[in-house]
Image (tube, rainbow, N blue to C red; front, side, top):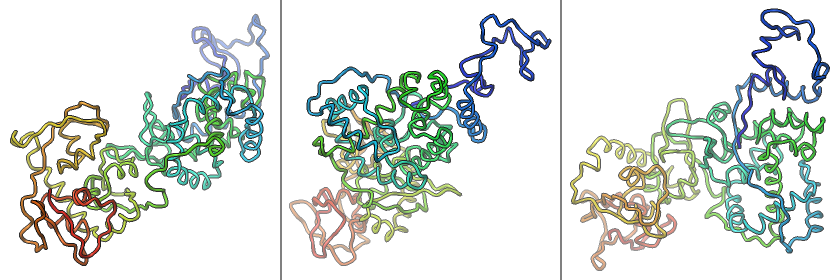
Length: 505
């Protein structure tokens, strides 16, 4: 979603009218200056001498100008819904009468004006008919994200139903990026993100942070509501900008109900609110339509955060806590390079599954020491200087992803990305990857006593009191926590004294 408007037109309150620079040099006290002379009167050849603006719309313009000047808020949100069409859709599972009754119930419990009309019916039925699978996936993701959104909206007195805007904006993809650069769950432009306190740097993009970006969206929506006094109009302004909404108010003759000014809005905004309302309806009546949403592997309440005290990578966190790199990336989407920096004056957090919080905090000093040692190694020869006979080429197969390939070769996702110049985690079937496999473990660290036995060529270890996957992995060269979990079919981090673990391939 994006809007562009000429700030000069707004500043001078010209609305849809303007003056040709070749004819009028400037205006003083309402009188035009032409060629340096004040013109006291001009022939009213077009009959527009006494045209007046709507006072209500002018007041809205003034309110917005105050916000604009005090906060330098310009181009913000982008999301196109211009492809929506409104022809009747054959969907006998939902009758018009049933839809009308449900919309009436929905209207009674929300501050939005949810009135039945054929266009809204068309959008709802199109989504039900053609987007069922994607909607179920989004419903699953919503179990994780919506509690965050509701908490932030409640703090800022925003209708909780505004959470459905994130579906229209980004399909709940924290790293979603539009063609004009709007980023994150709420699709903020770079400048607007900065304006609302979102940190955007080489390491971090808080437009992708679910909580911080929602706080910014709540503040912006709250300011729009203060200007228009109507949530439907605030929603329309979020999409196309207050200037376009005010033009639609003028062109409609002064109406301020969204459905009355909708014919005069830009096409994408005309479709934006129906898309939002259709999404709200389907989520609110998901059970009635037989949706069976896919649930995420954990709920928000099953996670917690810890303040990071030293630079660390998500790869290093994965290796020390046993949490899959894919889960860490899902939980921490604002770290662009999968690196959590340590910058003076700033606080960065790491979100982990609750069971891993204990592992991290209990072994915090060891983990940071491990991370520092890993960073220090970066000053040594890079992979391209390694002997060629250590290099292998892997061809991507169906079902592969970077974390899976990294675990197979005992390396990190970040290393594979660096070796192959990858900017994202996306892979294509048949794609060839250069890998420098970690040297297989030939013997455990002789400085550390271990209880090991042989099991058909594999070494095993008997768990003792005080052991954890992390501490055991440290006892064997080239072995990671994820290796131990893969080799022993362990899904969590809990161990029992006396259990036998395979500690080498």
